[in-house]
Image 1 (cartoon, one colour):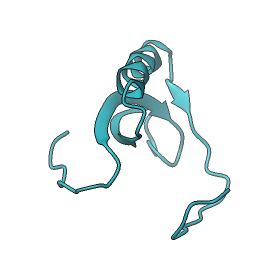
Image 2: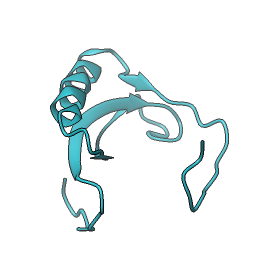
Image 3: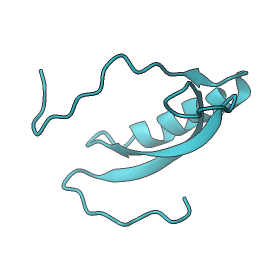
Image 4: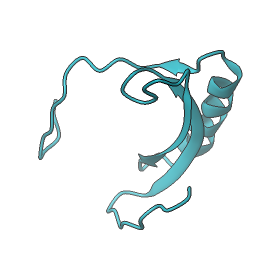
Length: 79
């Protein structure tokens, strides 16, 4: 990913993608955008699995459709 800042996390993290996503919150005025996203997990086999899913999203017209229902921010894990 170009111009990405480097951050440290306690949980193993990798960039996955690019994913093709569509929706006003991601690609306003465009049919879709292709973005890479960070995936933090202790289950490291998820990285290649999510990468394969990302490749499928690029084959689907419009990719993954997103809708923002509400904007929230928290400082802890929600259960």
